[in-house]
Length: 424
Image (cartoon, rainbow, N blue to C red; front, side, top):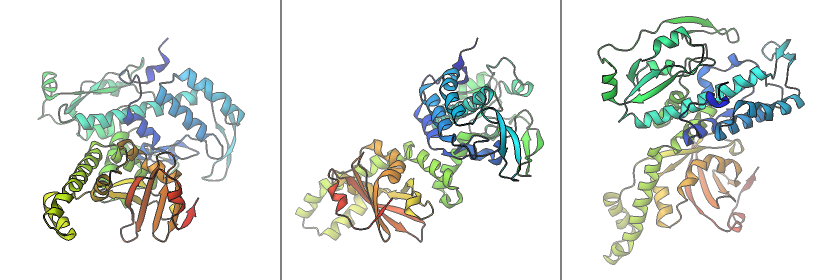
């Protein structure tokens, strides 16, 4: 009998930060049918069909999260979850009303087979997305991917024909054919160097394989799409690449084009990126150097304005502004992004108040849980867990919130003295 954990690729004995972030930033969304959500939306939404109207999605999510984080085998996953689902009535076949047409129908709720599908699909795609992020990070040194043989006992003919295909990491083929490529697919890829690609017969003049598609009609939405032959409908996407494109939209200034869930996921990916870490480190470094130079410049007789002018030439901040979170519903402003610039980070540093680097990836959670007061276009927050005090300013014309200042405030009474209306 195969190891129950064979659903998880061998290289993932423990979940990587990329994998945990991919699943953790998904927003839960109950649905009646798996076809109700577009394939690319699964990159930032956790959903299970037939959960609409049942209080079980949070239980399913918690169990999947535990399985991904702790590499829980399927039988343990099922043993812990099945009693909860049975108790809540989400098990077996029963009548349920389809919200699309309001008609009752006999549907399959929970079952051992459905739980295995839920387990496999979420665990496998989370690891695939995490691996894609690392692939992008390493492509300068390992610029090619090679399609590898499935470990499943029964292998699809088309999938077998793709084994050995070698293409650059950013080739369009991987947008649709990056594994898994269907229900139960255990195909894989391996990232390789240019030298190995050439040894294995890569021919840059050959181009990629010809992709043959077939029409598939989504009877729920009425939409007809082209799906590559050999790939199950709904699996012709690359979840990691989808999240990457969302992040690219942030850089391109098209954040308003993203749905709220995609926006939140893209911001979380961005804050965890090496580029953001570099911004924080560089900004803090400039801030400390400025603080150290002030005394000497004053001794030279420079005024405050002259010092600022000198710093602008000799110690400039990076001209970069990054989103670090999405304003929660209680702010009441359409989930606009929360931005921070290099000068704000540097200013905190020159006052020895820069938060620990581990805080940045949690800004989104802090915005949701921290005590908050709003006074006009200004929101002040204090987080009891991190002791972080944040002042945000709304910029309606740009549809963003700007972090005006942030620092560690050890005493909660400091927040208590702030004016404004308390936000629940």
